[in-house]
Image 1: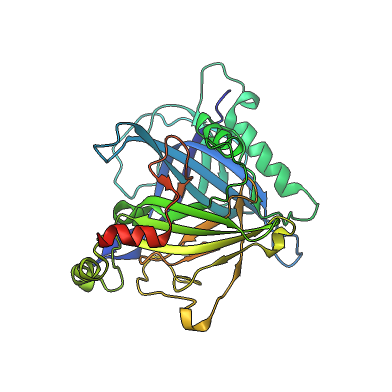
Image 2: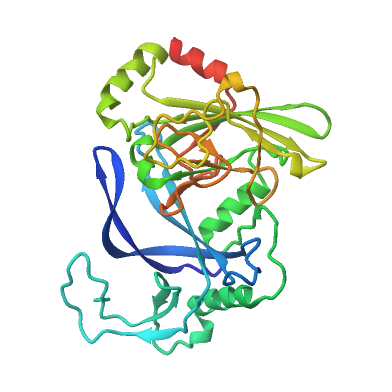
Length: 368
């Protein structure tokens, strides 16, 4: 398979970590990412005459690393995702500066002497790749990506309301994910396993280590899954001065440094519109990463269900967004400006362990 990986650049404000909190400065910088593939989807409701027509561009990238655990002797792949909405596509052109020169950190001028094919999306995004000698622009991956974006942007049809994110095998990494989801190792295509997205800046210390799914059938058409996530840590941001004390409390009360969170998924195979999440005491609503004391949908309020917003490839893989520092979650993303870690449980090169322990079993292990 020929890879369709290209480069992606975007201009954004520089953020800094101050006393645990993420603070956006007024300074801007262009960031460059290699090994990127692109998917383009219409935005429901974007056909209204009162607003410019837009499409959503989804960027996926990956990086290969050695596993951090010395007991696990295998490489792993870190997968990343970033999404943005655009309404304008510029023409492709060739760019080649006369000579390389030293530029300051905040400079937006391109300094590499190599020639590249590049086009711009709106004001702050670029897709490009190195220009090979004698190459024809129509045969490049950059051209193919632009054609797909332009086709969808100019399409006069109604925006698709499908909640399923259809991943296409544009790289070997994408193909590995698709092959696993279509042909899981346990041979069961009925297993309901969520795909988890977490802001990558939070994952530096609070990364997800394990996911456990315990599935039971309620009847022939309906299933319920108890999902338990085990994070490496839980770093306070809004109350960073209490972080050390909070760790000691977790040790004495829960016998662990790890943060453990549990939610439920209900799937109705006869009517997917009835599929839902139950985030008891951990719903994030619209709260973002700086928040660390969000406990939405508290238990006394009874069982609150949230319709599943998105799926990955099919209805057996609902998407969950970890939005806050205390790992409150939702069916929507509350950190649009941040790159996400994409956790696909079960893929052979994943850093994430996929298990089948119940929350009760996991708590009992820590208590011992």
